[in-house]
Length: 617
Ligand code: ADP
Image (cartoon, rainbow, N blue to C red; front, side, top):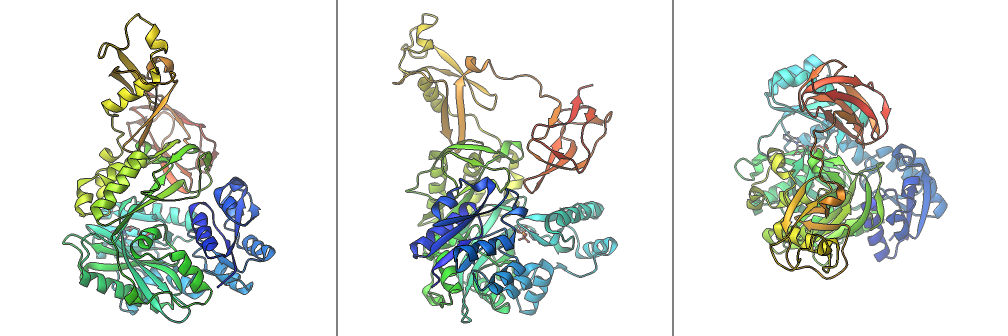
């Protein structure tokens, strides 16, 4: 077994790898950028090396700096985590050329699966069913259009180099194809430096089912069953579970056997995932499940597999990379119970999932019930430089019902703030009836987005408790003013305001012990409301929204859709901002006329920069 490992990553996955390495007595070396000088992964590791400024292109993505850091600290191996350099074959090769152990598959396996089109061809040859579509070299626009017409709409355009749900466009009808193609190619060129695309038949009632595979350097490959990641928003996973609801033994056996064939076809070593897409319109059937792609690394959602199999996948990675055979044979692996994971993000679902940068003063989940995989602690900042994931919350239950109930309980009981999170959204998603019934598909969240992203009113009991806590033990301002007796139930009302500009009126009941407070946080259903006496905030803002279009975060303007003098309607797209690796549309808050546009495509803008102004006339 290796004696030391450098983790070429940050955040929760760096912490996750360090934890297992330490348990195995392996010395750990962390790397960090300027933005991560105080990060948790630095403190958990035995040693840490600074590798540059915050932008990933100058730090976490610079292979040379990472290899030098490993050499300097005498680390024997490099674990890439996920993202960053994890699926970069040249880096893997450079690590090996430097005489270090690469904790991952052989570079040739990464390359074989690296581009979606080549991988699909290879899999078809290996007898793995693939999604019908066009995966050819000819990238002329007219040719691609003709192929899409031939496949029949709806189709999905995918960047061959894409990943993480980016570089993909659904096209419902022929008339929209060329626009979608242009936008997909633009995003692909910007994000992946490769604008080639493939076209796939869009599967109706699609379910995302993936199989965890594992190989060693002795030619053994096993699978660790499936995960269902169908609950997605814009092709990004929101909830993951294992096993997949409605999967029968025969279908599972066939699917997992195909996954093992796929892994063997590329001499796979280490942890990998074969992603399939299933047409779930009539339940899961082996003849309606097709290969989509292989991820040649550990996945974000690997913990659900760990929970149902009892295997520590990072331990297996470190053992396999050290040349050991797999710790278990296929017939020694089985499924125990049900596991589920949600991704807790610093983002505001009520504002189009805008990343919410800021402090994490409170971060507290009932960890006897839920496994919290995170890279942050209370007091940390969520940095605008990286993915705004705060944590993964993972539960294991005897049944699916139990897993859902436990996870909802954890979200309800837990607290995370003051930055805005998607916890309430997750709580509502997990409470969806269709989800509970197991009839999931990748469009479920999209179809119910409105209701899932609406912040509900707090409960009357919650507000009453908050009001009582604000007033305190009867000696606060309310007790002395107006000469009314606080203890007479139902006789007094109090108006509270939350941080979102809403206000609520409650009847005051029994006062609570303790001094009066300026504000109190009410946690319910994953939502964290910071309540204050309405008077204290000068009343809620009832006015019409401002027509000033401000940059919600620092970023780059990539398209301006309107000009000064133009009439716009509420919701109309004004411009597109690229920030935190995603495109954000800024839209008109009401019907009106564009007064000014202060930016052009290509501009770098700061947060709150006035990009445009709309007026009603
Ligand atoms: P990425 O590499 O960006 O994760 P994938 O190819 O894995 O992209 O696809 C991501 C998601 O997009 C899938 O989980 C699925 O929900 C959806 N998807 C992909 N291909 C299809 C298809 N042919 N039909 C319907 N949905 C699809």
